[in-house]
Each structure stands twice: as C-alpha cells, then as structure tokens.
Image 1 (cartoon, rainbow, N blue to C red):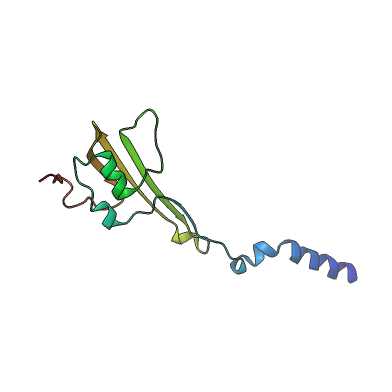
Image 2: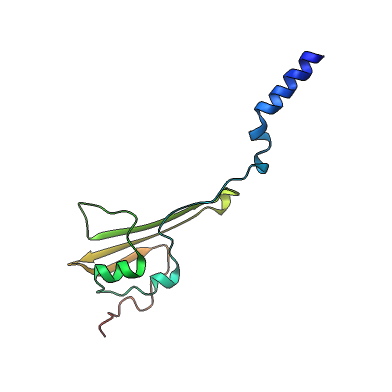
Length: 118
C-alpha cells in the first residue's frame, strides 16, 4: 500500500503542470508594431518615407532587396487564453520614395487618395 501511495504522489507531482494548467500564469506576448485605426487614418497618398515613419514608426520587417515595400506586423499571443490571440498587418508600397498604396487588416483611410499638399 505504501508503494502505491508513493507512486501515486510522484505521478501527481510529475503531471502537475498539465493537470493544473489553469492555475499557471502565462504572460501576454506582444510582438511588432502596435497600430490603431487612428494611426492608419493619418496616411495619405504621396507622403514621403520620412512622413510615414513619423506617423507609423519604423517598419518591423525591412527587405534589403525591396526597399519600396514596408511591412508593419503586430501579433498578440494571449497567455491566459489562446482564443484572445490578435494579429494585424499593414503593407505600404512606395514609388520614388512616395507612398502609393495601402493594404492591411485595418480599414482603408477615407482621405487616403487626397495628398497632404492640397
């Protein structure tokens, strides 16, 4: 009986993390550029790269071979509940160092096609 009790205790201790997973605290892990719709709404066609960087920050991924495409990616891995994971992305394309197109998980800015100069 004593061997059975000791073996049972070791089994419970060794499987503790998987049995009591709800009791283990896991942190949220944000990665990338956190953006909101209000940041995206400031984008306008024909903005320079410096102006876009001022509004959005530096892109999270830069490509040495295609410097005319900027990628902004944000991932939130929720430690407490995987169903609360969140991902957003924005891809900006430039031509002659001027913003020409927007693609992403946010709504397209209403005034995107109106240059700032007007």
